[in-house]
Length: 153
Image (cartoon, rainbow, N blue to C red; front, side):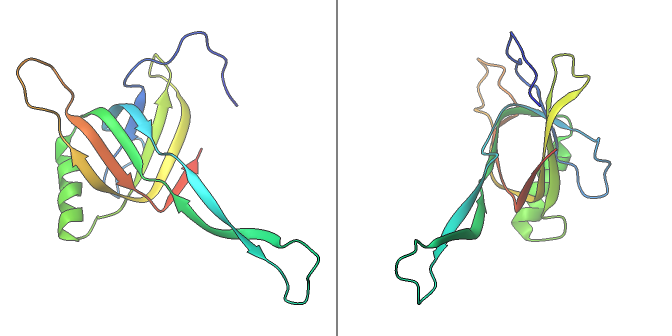
């Protein structure tokens, strides 16, 4: 159920758990300003019986597709966790996929308003910030995750 608001949520209100398996689900170690791609698309397959000439085809559920989830402009409390995960994906070793939890928090960071759980997720793209002494940019410019399933809780 939605909550009526007059003001929008401020930046860094998306709390993300990138923890390895075995960690507590409450071990959140990252925050991001923008999360996109939380989507599922189900394809429609049409079927018509071979002897039926006048009836329209039946529409049945086909395969489904999960969008890549993009996390932008973020801070990671424990960079070693992220880099260990990137290394596991690169080398094809254990711990390649993880359960990633994304929560939209209220302004006081006391309560999650919405939660998305990415099942069997792994990073397919990591982009660091531009290195310049003129700005105080964030630690992660963009992190793109592939996932097999998205649960909304």
